[in-house]
Figure 1 (cartoon, helix red, strand yellow):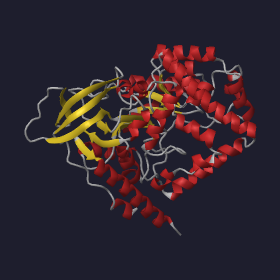
Figure 2 (cartoon, helix red, strand yellow):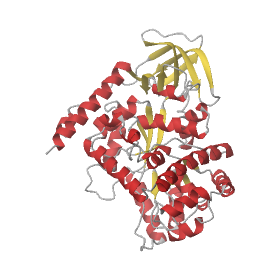
Figure 3 (cartoon, one colour):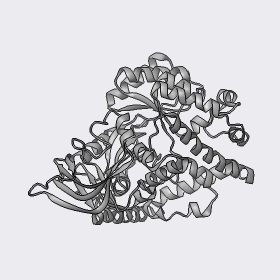
Figure 4 (spheres, helix red, strand yellow):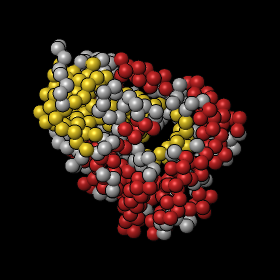
Length: 467
């Protein structure tokens, strides 16, 4: 770890004054390209946008040369509470244009862990102050509230833990699958009373519609919705003690899927303002765990061996749940059905937010956001709607739509410059020329340096861990 700390980058100057000339703006709300624009940034804010905007004296000029300028991406389901975050995780997020993160496991249940909420809060301040390279840590969550199956949580206990976690500084309470429906309701109610909220995995004994009515503000992972939409749902939820359904039940979820039940679930989510974070990259791993081409991903060089090895073991466990040809086909069909569900949810009016479960098996830090954008488009969203799910919709969800999420005067200068139009092809979001965070410019050379430092940090960690 001593070697890793020596590899930290010194960030660019804080809040540079910039003029970005000759760019085509991506309007993520209207879904159109606004051509031939100049964007002026001062003190980390966008102060002017237009065709006839003058360039103030003394500012650094970034020549866009007809490239495309868009808002920075937000990952609304990420995991980075780890000692390697400063040297390996955060730089990769920045290098891939992730400028905001909702971190979904920021506090420790065991205070002996090497990184807990106090460190996460310190990293948040260091990033904001320009002394640490990384995206804004927009929201930090509690540890998952997940009592043992045989433990009945009392109301005063549920409310007390929410108050305690709020006092520690969390922005949301993460719920998990062993909670009782009653406990989830108390948690969500107490969180709302304190000005925070509950989100996460749903109790297995509770439908998505019930959780929405109880006050859960976002449902994480497509899987939880698919659990609701087949005739055996009530029996499954009454008996299940695992988030991984038995093979026969998963086949029933696919073969007996009932869109009408999902439609009613969407209506409940819309009525209660509950957003949906599908994290399709996680189910993609489930579907392709036995595919050698998928597993031999060249991005492994950006991961320490200990992480990569744990991913291999997890993929093997997924295959072992049902290694038969029928079982593997069911896993792929479950993933495809999840994609179709996302299309239907979006068309019904459910707020879809981009999340990656970054750090989970085959969800690569940073680049998995680009994978998830592609999967949202594969699901049936337009490129514009997929980009909105990663920019303005997350900002609106956390109450910051007035200051983040679009390229407009008065908003924070969190921007990505890409070589080609992502509204024509979502894959173009991977062609990043520059990232700007609060006016700090990371040009292509700086982004390449970030990636090189990550590779060096990985090599150093592997060398330290070697016997």
